[in-house]
Length: 320
Ligand code: FDA
Image 1: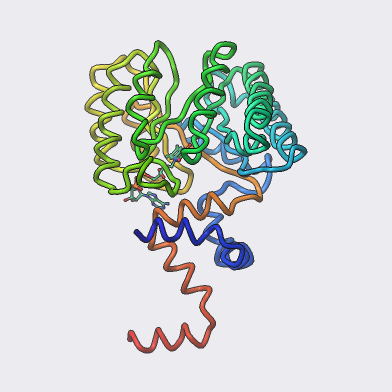
Image 2 (image 1 turned 180 degrees about the vertical axis):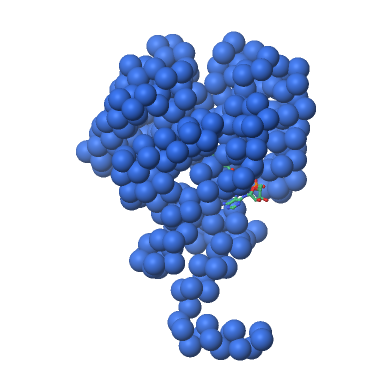
């Protein structure tokens, strides 16, 4: 309930101004975001690789309605991939990239937007191929699901390593997963981070977990390459049990930068492939809000730091 309310409130300009203009928000951002530029992303990728972890890098930004901005985001990815390649980080897909279709133009008109996003992601995928690595097309809210899956599907014709993302929260996902369970196809399964209508999505966390478990089983019993993106210990345990009947190295776990830091190397030390999703860039608002919505305790800290000093000290006294 709180999660849905927060995601809805985040659309307000006032909340945007309040959150982006405060030092407290900056401190929380530093936990979840590698830094402002490609240099920061490369540095964090190098550190994670040294710890035995795989990486996917996301240049932050979404919901672009400016064609020049969409082109600039694609150009940033190409430059990033060249830098990663020059550092020897991309070999065998060890460091790849994740891209949001709405960051590269999907919202610029229905057919035109999809064509633009598709062409930009094609450029990124070509740069990824040249660097010896892959691109994964992130999932956004349900209005973009068809386009996102279409873009990734068409991309796979030319770049077989291109990955799709599905969200267990969406009612349609089990059927999408069946269609995606084809040989070698890289599919990331996550719970879903967006505020969705009940007509499209399960909203009860227990229902979402059950959907995740059903989709997970389909992927793990199929011929593709499942990418299990969750920090939920119970779902990780289920995946580990299902993974026992798969070839070693034929699936991976994925977690977000800044979340369950200790679990990531622990899983990797057990012999599993573990990839960390690392966002970077200045356009962190939407990403931060989704992370705060998943973690009400961080939100509480932030709200307390935003309150005027006098209110804070009064509330501290009254609870003492
Ligand atoms: P859940 O939210 O139930 O969390 C399980 C446990 O993880 C919590 O109890 C807590 O310990 C810890 N935790 C979770 N979130 C935390 C936070 N913000 N801060 C601190 N601890 C936290 N979504 C989407 O819609 N499209 C996408 O493309 C992607 N891509 C993606 C890639 C990767 C690698 C991951 C891990 C996740 C995504 N997601 C995503 C986000 C995903 O949909 C989901 O919102 C989050 O992963 C949180 O869900 P969990 O499965 O972790 O479970």
